Length: 212
Image (cartoon, rainbow, N blue to C red; front, top):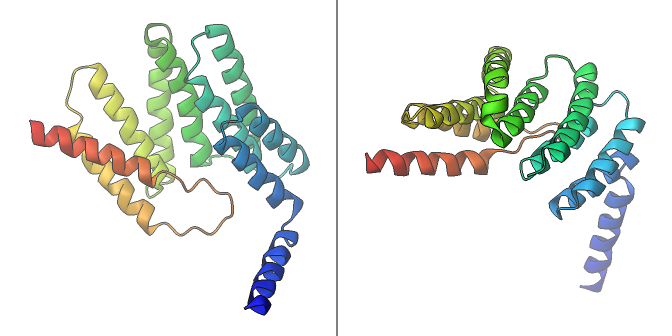
């Protein structure tokens, strides 16, 4: 038994030591993000991006953390500063990987953060841009589950705003779930997430449908 434990310890140690500096850094950044240490996570993703100049993922995640944290902001000056910085990160990622649907829908998420803060001020100018982004991303990657789900969420938000039913978009959420389950995860640190969110949205869809 002691020999087995020793062997397992050595195997684990070997696997950790075999990680590249990039992998160690990304793993640490995700841990910081998970523990809600957003500033530290962003700074680490930014440092990794500086070292990995041909890799779009570090600046993409720096932008993503910044955008998600901006949704909680009540101060427009702070919100604008965060989203301007997020756009810089996204522009860096986009320069490395053009017409990347993951980056495209994150630009739309950035716009949504502005709209969520003040719909009257930002809705008119940014809503049209988001429609164009989602349509282009869907044309490029019709089987990307995050694209399908993000567009469905956006369409649902629009329906709610205009007092229309969201049920017509439930089928798109179902399609996203199917695509999530079929997706092959081949690239380390790629943003494969979204299945749990899609399932919760579908559950809400089905609840509303049963009430009508």
